[in-house]
Image 1 (cartoon, rainbow, N blue to C red):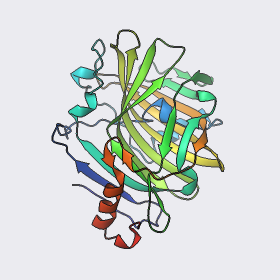
Image 2: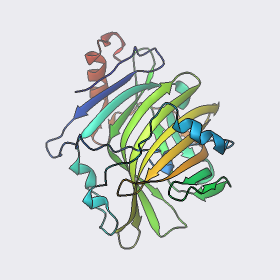
Image 3: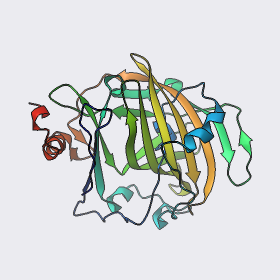
Image 4: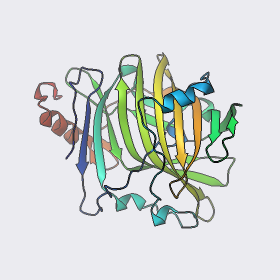
Length: 289
């Protein structure tokens, strides 16, 4: 077990607990799967970001990798995608505080994202012309439990598979999120690191067309009561672990449902896990009744 902790009323409270299920094979601890925007679908981002800021972000709070290990054989191009792929790994549970304005269910405004900047790391070519693309079912829920004092906590149970459907494409995207790590959270913004593997699957054949690995840093900012923006910088790697591109993506998300405590998440009993977490940290005084 590995954990780090700050008082729940400070800017950041974070716990990492590894839970291995009998039917799962433990994660290869020597492999470093750095994720991202866990999927472009998870980037609820804001427009109006200067592409020149991308390099500054890459040198900021997250150290992006130069190279990653190759993806597993069952995620390589040409292989049929196995919907049970997540059963091959163990589950990691993370808890951290989020501000009230960030809690709830969110959906991309107009179901679209805007790529503000792209750099091809193989050719060095840079593109700053905005490019907008559509994505259906691009939604996310932030916040799962509340403590006795009303503080809202988010549970990141990884890995998990997230699907994004592109109506204009012959492919669908399966994003396997392997890490969600809070970097800085306060009353004004939330900075979160994501790591994932994104698999493009042909809708008709079910075969993997392309698999990439992402590392990303997202900054969520409140726009008004029911709207948030987030700037996301993604460093992308191919299936062999070679760095291929850097993207700066932006979008705006509207709240489609206010925060409501969630009792179960992908088979995990969040009520019990949250009480266990607070107990382990000696925070029995804020365990909800």
